[in-house]
Amino acid sequence: MLIFLALLYLSVACTGIWLAFFPSGRDAVANVLQLWRRRTGQQVTQWRWQNARRVSNARADAHQLVHAQLSFLQRKWKYLALAAPLIVVPVVLALVIGKRSGLPAYQAVEPLPDAQIAALLKGEQLVPPTALPPLAFSTQEVELVRPMLASASRNWGLLHPDFSQRLLLVFKIMKEKHGYDMAILEGYRSPARQDLLASMGSQVTNARAFQSWHQYGLAADCAFVRDGKLVISEKDPWAMRGYQLYGEVAESLGMNWGGRWKMMDFGHAELRMRGVMPHAAAPG
Image 1: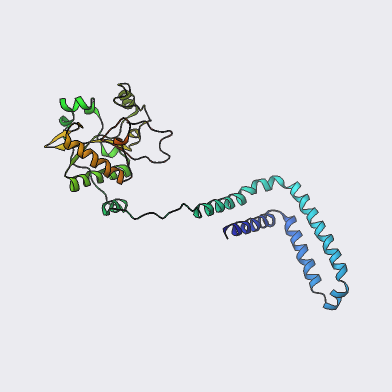
Image 2: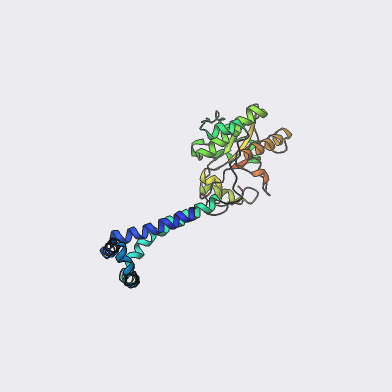
């Protein structure tokens, strides 16, 4: 049915452009209509007597009309070339959309498994937690695990709104369901800082500038807070259990978790949005 409508549109559009832009087209149509009216207005008896002659004339007229149209196309091909996109583009779009809607693999979106996820997509606006004092990110224990962390950005306002709301929902679920308080270690990362960290070796990151989702505000490194102090090390069983739960929650909200990577980064989560990064991101 959609293909029939597309072809019908093509025919109507061609006729409309011909009549709207070319007087010779209108004249030809008017002549044909006038001829038809004159001949069909004759009496039935005259029609029977002149039937053979009319058929011969009609063939001659048709041949003349076809010849006139071919001549017209030769003279006006430049104008028709300019008008062609107006006809072709809607038809192509109709055919493409029709094919997409008929794909056998198409499935309706499944209902969200959790009411909190549904609340996020409905527009619930979560607010960042109270920031830890800067000293919490510069202790000796923290520097051993995450060098240069003190100078990292933890500004939630520099993150993409969609990603920040998902990450805040992760924090909320981790607190309410699993009893873990969380803090962001680093969110947005400038290209210069990314190159600086990459120069420190693959144990820090393999990504150069603009190869990490951090540069687009779509990634963050997070850790846990216990008794007012950051707990980052995976050697802590409590923290390791938290990272596993954190990864599960992040993935349930459509994010990618660094704990799945070959070079595991348990505190990392990112939201990969199509069309944002020009090429594939390296871990970190």
